[in-house]
Length: 123
Image (cartoon, rainbow, N blue to C red; front, side, top):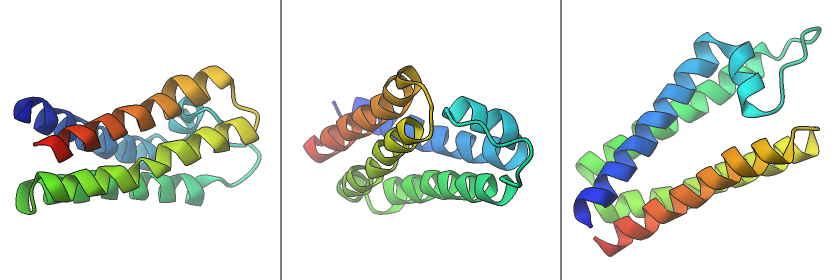
């Protein structure tokens, strides 16, 4: 179970880094994939950059916690971070995104993050 817990945590943190990179360097396509496309006539650039920075930072902090503080610290971090995809679920639903994206991507991500936290607590 230890290998599974650590592997899932590393994969989730690397995925956060990937999402951060995409939002920083491919903001329009990333916003569409998020479930709420950026308004072509508006200036959503700063907000998409903020999201990229947020996601990338979560990935880096998660990897640092896992490497230097251990599984228990990472588990608490994952538990707290699960609020983000839960919030993203509500954002997508509130702003006209599809239920498939809201639940199939964001809510499912929250569930996987919570599973990761549970596995890390069990290590």
